Image: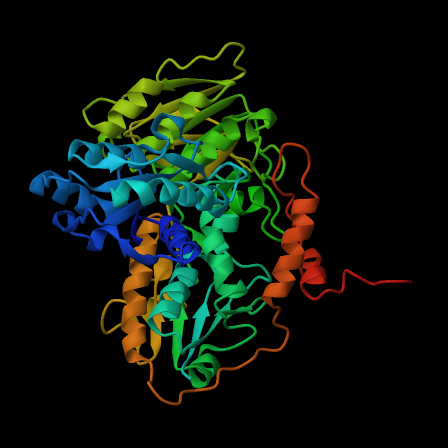
Length: 152
Length: 391
């Protein structure tokens, strides 16, 4: 399966996790790409998109995802037939805006017609879990759901 | 194989190393630090109750564990090795030493007992080796309107139970009754991040009054939303004041208060200044020679607070470090290169791994670590002299 891991980062934590997920799914044809370098008109229904993003400031998208967010609004692409999943990184020390970045990207993709696979999972920087330990099972589960979905 | 020496294992230095690992996998990178422990301000500056912010350490651990970057601790630039020796030994030398000195107000009475800079205070609260925590009285004035000032008031306003999950050393605000945070400028131009202000609304034992925060904007809204915060049984109070320029400190030997230019006097037995950090004369000389941003001379670079001044959070300094790494990657020789040097007495990443394990193992209930707070204690583990085996 073709998989694109797209990340939005500000401190590099989401970038590292995206690279780890990419390596973990090494049996597939995986690319890892910063959202700042990704053109929203380039979504391909043959590819599974795994989006990894943090949250910054008052629930805003991280810096590297902001150009993508703006481009999504401007281009308003029709993403019918595109499948994606979202893994958020947040910090529960800021409960009012915990993982808003992931929520926003989920809404953006769904509003454009794309279909989300699985549940949006969020890692808590103030918690005890390692991000990899949550993200690897999430990615495996999403890929398992995606195989029939993308083949259909 | 080209060689790179990065001076300072704080976030800026580590981000330069991380980007260089990607851009020039052939480079041999050494990160020097004055202390036998890495991570600089992430360990000793980021507040003890902001452990999530410290999570970037996981990225930097990889540099040393998997990516072949060498940690050379216990090497102080100027004392243990000269800049000339490093420049002779490495193809590129990056100064990422930050800014350690508290900026002074320069007003009468500044040397009275009971007046302390934010850097001095936060280092002690963060368990910096051999730093002595200044005594904190009952009535505290914090001068400053940035996030460092907010860190100070939040930590003073918290009780022991509110430090669950932190690695704080002690309970700094144990005896505090009144805190006043004073800004020279109007509230509209205060440099607090709104998210830092809003966090104060969760203080469990402190009433909050915000005086004179008129205007519009997210920052003002955040401040106004705090006004009237009054948890049941609160034993402490916090007051925000704006537009007050400190004129002089009152008192004979110990500070008794602060007088402002409009005649306002706020009485206090402790004053903490959080008006920024500065470097020394040597830094000024180095930066004066800079031909362009971040490049001080051929093969000599600067990044982070050392270059930019005490502004910007971890993400902003990361962006600066990534840009500089691109430049260094282009400058490094393609063939050959200098071999790098060792410095006598330097300690390795294995030393930090032992320190880290010991600190985590010693964490009391409700804390994630108990820092080793003496240089001798850190060195004993770093050099493995703490394990004496059978006696």
